[in-house]
Length: 50
Image (cartoon, rainbow, N blue to C red; front, side):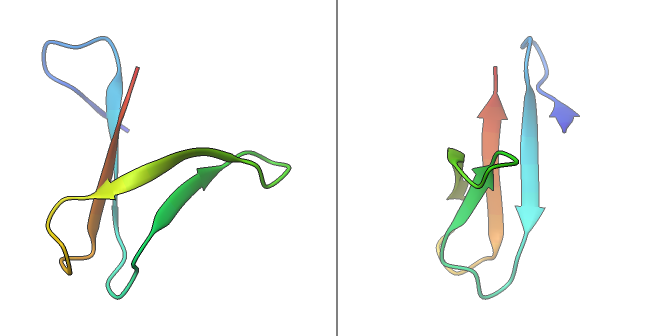
């Protein structure tokens, strides 16, 4: 993850062309968080981490 300027957390970013939804899963497959798409159809997703 990249550091969020001025914040304690970071930002997780992913480029997945064609993806409609991206989830962050734990090792058991449970959903921890969903990444938000920056611009619909762009394939760029991100999630701010605390």
